[in-house]
Length: 394
Ligand code: LCS
Image (tube, rainbow, N blue to C red; front, side, top):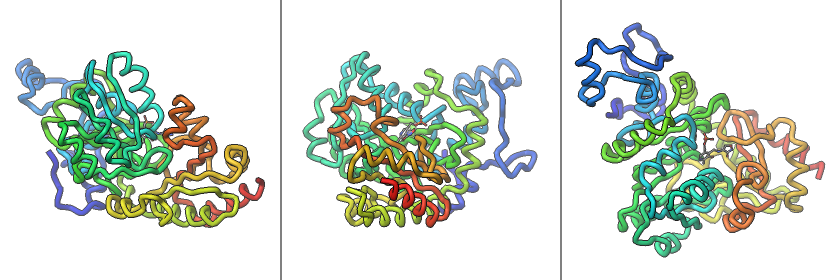
């Protein structure tokens, strides 16, 4: 499926999704239509039979969306992309495509809250069992696999604890038991980490985050390594109606062009912010894969091209001190989401991960005092000065 794969990554960000437009448009046009007219009945029948590449109906496929799917598939070095209305649309489509009553999944404990909540509520109701554990511990993964285990679901780095899983080693274990390995690559983007190259079978993103990068749309995408897997996942997405809208696809096609330069700047800033926080006397601990103090610093060096732009930390004085900080920042927005050009701060225990049980949160190291910081591309001096004045209020 993928074309242009010999270009460098930055060139693919600009040209990877482009076909030749008959009108010479420099950008992929928005095909804002729900349906497509057939030349005649036979042509329509061929489209439905899969004997023609013609478009039928936007829930099934659309040229603007296809351009984005092709581009992200190339960037992730996979067979094909499946764009979704949101990151959660991607998670739901993946669970629905591979799991059935009586199956079991092994998953990272500190995943984005709703990815776990939908498994432990809705999928549990349909008889799917799940085990959530620290997947950094490969022996724990081995011990958790049962005869009915079908999927190993990894998020690395984790939201919000910044723990890493060795994708290559974990995939090897999973494949010995014929599990499908799924990786949520939202925190890295394919610029920093390519799970399919490390052995995963399916990778997905909340494109709301780094891939779009401008905090103006919600979107998701799945990329499968093989055609066989693509044929399993695509119909699940289409039939459940998790599809993207053409306008959303256009927005991501626009935002994605600057992915590498945005991440370069954001992670350069994040390194300086993490250093600043680590040295600050009011800070208890900082988790950032670029810090030597990160327990998996070596794995980050091996598995990721850079440490990214997400930091988690806790202040001395826990939640009480954290609240003073979050209520007093002026440049950073007190808001959920991440991976955009603007710096954001939020409190996972009361916001993004509030629907997990307190016990599950603590077992996953999501302490009540944990503060999550998504570093933007502003002048780093301004980001640090903002933190400095807010920390002085504690
Ligand atoms: N996976 C990860 C790692 C995420 O961080 C999110 C959203 C999702 C999946 C779901 O994507 P969505 O449907 O929102 O596009 N994370 C959010 C967060 O940390 N704050 O707000 C949303």
